[in-house]
Structures are given as structure tokens and as C-alpha cells.
Length: 145
Image 1: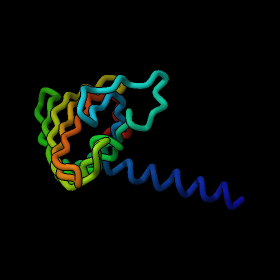
Image 2: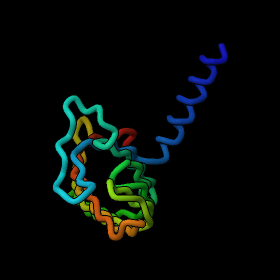
Image 3: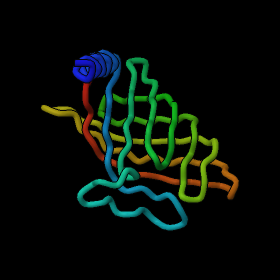
């Protein structure tokens, strides 16, 4: 009974939070070291391949991903579906973790579902020096406003 109640509370909380924002789930290759991007795992079971972006109605963007990191930023959206975003946060790379900034550009289109593709580049400073991971990801947008 307690488990069922906890699940119900969790579902209601997620649903109410989702009504306030777009939630995009991205999957794709990341480059988090000295070389180019690693291929996405097939099937996609590697946590490095995933990223979740929570976009509020005020165009504030919260990014949660192992690489390139955890960020807060602002998004500038154009009428043709393209957008640019930038912000600050924790940059994560195979060579370390540190404070830094990111910039992203992407495209979103909606039909029956909303699809999104994005390139995100981050720059940060860690104990090993400058880190600059990037990711090219595509995904779907859930709970579209």
C-alpha cells in the first residue's frame, strides 16, 4: 500500500512539473576527451549517450547529462524551429570536472510528436587544464507546452 501511494505521488509530481515545461530526452554520441566522438552504444544502454533538457515557459533551460555536463542557461528560439542556447554550469569530461560555460544550437519540429536535434559544446577548467567536451544528440520532446 505504501509503495502504491509513493508511486502515485511520484506520477502526480512528474505530471505537474511537466505541465510547466518541455522535457526533451536526447541520445547521441559524445566527445569527452582528446579524440572525436564515440559512437552511440547499440542498444543505447550507456548513460553517456543520454541527456535530459528541461525547458521552462520562460525559456530557461536545465540540462542534465554526464557529458558535457550539468547546466543552466537561456534559449533563444526562432519561428522556423531553430534555436540557440547558452549558459553556465559544471562541465564534465573524461579528463575532469570543473566550472564552465556551454553553447548549443538545435532544431525542433513538431507533428504527431516533437523531434529535436542539437549540437552542444562546453568549455571548462579542471585540475587537468582546459576541458571542452561536445555532444551531437537527437531525441523527442515530451510534455510539449
